[in-house]
Image (cartoon, rainbow, N blue to C red; front, side, top):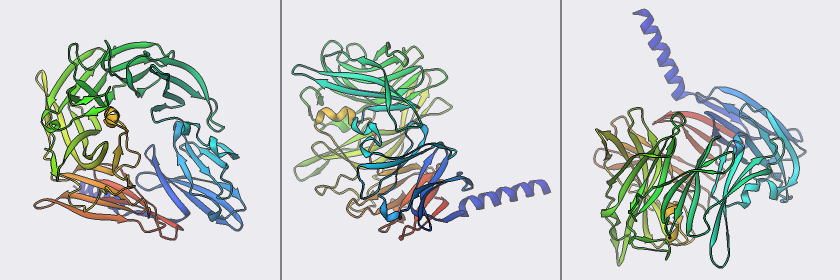
Amino acid sequence: MGNRIGIFLVFLVVSVQLFCQNVKRNLISANSCYYRHTIYTFGYEQKKDILFFKCISYSTDLQLKDSTEFALGKHLPADYLEISSDTLHDVLNFYFQLADQKNQVTLLRLNNALQKVCAVENFDANHVNSLAAFDDEKYIHHQDLYLIRTSADSLNKQFYLSKYTVKAMDKPFEYDFKWQYAFERKNIHRASVIYANNQYVIIYAHVDDGLKKGQWILRLNAGTGDIVKGLKLNAKGDNRHYLYSKAIYDTVTKGLDIIGSIYPTAMIDFNRQSSNFSNLSVVHQLFLIQTDSSGEVTTRIEKPFPLPPPKKTGSTFTSFHLKIREFAKQKDSSYTVWADLYEQAFPNIMAYYSSWRFTVVPKESDYIIKPSTFYASTKPLLNFISFAKGDPYGKLYLNNAGDYDKFKYIKPTNPVVVKTGLDSLNNQFYILKKTDLLSGRKTFNYVFLGKKDLEKKLLFTSEKGQTINLYFMDKRTYISFITNVTGTEFELKATKL
């Protein structure tokens, strides 16, 4: 009995430490990123007349792991623009650019243990990241880059998938060309890499006319670029649009599970770039397709999934559109799905409205969809989404109705949703971020189900000069990174909702 009490007390102490522990440290112009289950904090330290860049890593229980520093010479923090960083090709890349030398930049590259991979001073800023010149249809797998580009003439647009590999990790990134796959010349509307590993490259391709009209999943050999398998999402004789949203690749079975939405051809015409979503709320359907290692279909289901009815404002109707954000398979072969609902009140503008959870559960030889109760997560947040001219926050813009298939899978560049989950009573909660583009101020709100309806709780508001980042460690525990307004100190703190 005594041992049990002792174990319980140890557990209690550890738990209290987790939710009360915080780290404070002096660091100038600090920022942070979360990578490989580690929090990396970075910024400047001034030592007499020498400016140092410092990076410090912490475990998810806020224990110090490693640190490193890099001398930038006789400078002050004010001499530099904001530190840029990324984790391209599985390393930590930091870029330092002097405010009065906008054509030159210094690069420091570290591995996840903060060991130096490369340091290059004063190279052409236009080559900081040669991917910057590419469009957003790219996919990174370790040191490989897959890029879909197009070329056009007076008759057709030609799509190409090219594979490149990093030449050297100890230099600014440059790439060797490996192979190119040319799609059929006619009628390709869209192509996007959705997954890649050492064996396969998997592509979503949309053919908008001709004998092969429909949506396809193509599996290519990653070493040669040869096509291995082509799977048409819409079955033979079915002309509806099966628009891809998310996929899960099983690294053990090598099967692929695909989820998306079905649209009648009368609702969207990709050739004419026109749409009519007036009855979308009633006719909207979901599809789930499971394939084996060879790409053959093992399960194909489609189920009605009604959306909230359209709203009328004056003479304008607002339609709602489902965009799947998370798609996860559970041990019991069911799926958990978190979707974001976007509101279209103006042509080709999709504005975030709410988030919605549902499950796809196997039952005998079929699956059933179990949606949770729908709540408008933005309802307690007045003017959360602004439709003022020049304010793009929380919105996705389509060039025309022909971009609707891309809307279904593309990631927002500045996400509204930080986290969605279930509270202790199994009710949905939402952590929503609002960024004021003029002032740069961020607000983080916790929206939850109260006694009668949704309520809100303000978690953080950044003041001018402050940086705030949130990283969720599990369903309800997050670590906040917050700098002070003078930009000289940061705090890491673990909190449970």
